[in-house]
Length: 272
Ligand SMILES: [Mg+2]
Image (tube, rainbow, N blue to C red):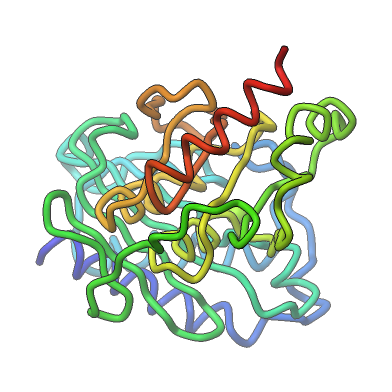
């Protein structure tokens, strides 16, 4: 079984388990703090268990790196490959019944972001699946995708994650970008928002908070790069990090290099 087929099987099992819980009181029952540092809700656990169940059903040996359970070994040869997952990205949306949430799954031969080889992000509610394999492009429900060619911040639809206690600091840093952007968005599931950049639905997504878990973006990173987009550190370096639920990243993701350079120049302006 290919890694991509395996990830598809996991995501369909998750969808089956999670759909009935969306917007329910039951979804919100708490199960302590997960490896990623957030409170684990019943809906998160149901999704994670669906992945573990699927891996076991197919007799897969791997190391699972997950937002809730942390790193765990599955099967007799756990070092064969790594599966990095955020079982539900957008748990708050899921609990409230706000229909924007995704499953994120990635495989790699080493526990590093730059080595992710297969990626899947699935919009749970709408059953839309984004996939990528290294050097083979990115796809939305099996159709090849590419980002937008838009280069003007004034016309761009730009996502920014503002959920941080250091909001004042972040807003100051982003001000030149915010002032030019007429269409700001934050939809509450960063993996899916990155896929929206990958398929041209939006044009950029910026998260400079330093608190997004690498498990959240492991799959979307490859999907965006394979689609032809840009996703780098705020300084413009290659984005890489150990795949671990405690590891955090900041990034600028854009549809194209020109839009990245515009945003970077504006951020540098604010930094002076
Ligand atoms: Mg999550």
